[in-house]
Length: 251
Image (cartoon, rainbow, N blue to C red; front, side):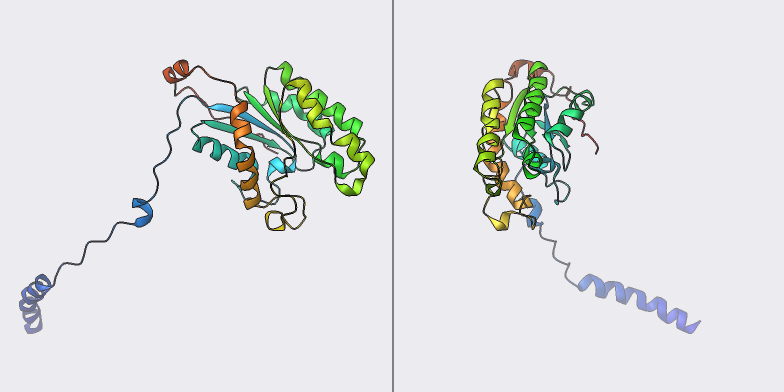
């Protein structure tokens, strides 16, 4: 009992001692929060874009969010374009495989795309397939999108030097000629920003690294933005909440 009374007497002394101590300094605001740039507002309805192609679009060897469609969508939104890109890239696809799944891909979209970005033909070239087959398949693909009133950005490819001059003479003109035929926007050589730059390519020397993807996006984002159909800004401002996110095709 005596110890209990002594403990009770000691409590006020402890409280007074605590009150005599200076208050701890207020925590400084986090620089990462204070200094973070404000998010860029994105106005208007979603602009639905379909990325249709092979591993260069699928994001082979990259982490989630590092593929060309992912980084391109971010770049477009940073420019104020309310882009929603559905990634229908499948690693290993030839032009024939792309043509086979084209109708399924289109009918699987929740919203009809205004624009399609096509990257096909690289695997045809790497397998040494006859350029005439590549041309015919790409021609059918572009015709399908054109008939559906979907604008096209065609990502061009060049034949590897080891395939010889004859092969290159048949393969390389495919992209500019088809782009002209269908009124598509042509990126003459999709890999131009990373070619002969080992630090921007993966170990297979075929696919870009994440940094390489960013270099390609920087080189092509204006082409994509300029290819989007013009919208009626007055109509868009009346219904900003009607947009629905585009569907990503699972593969």
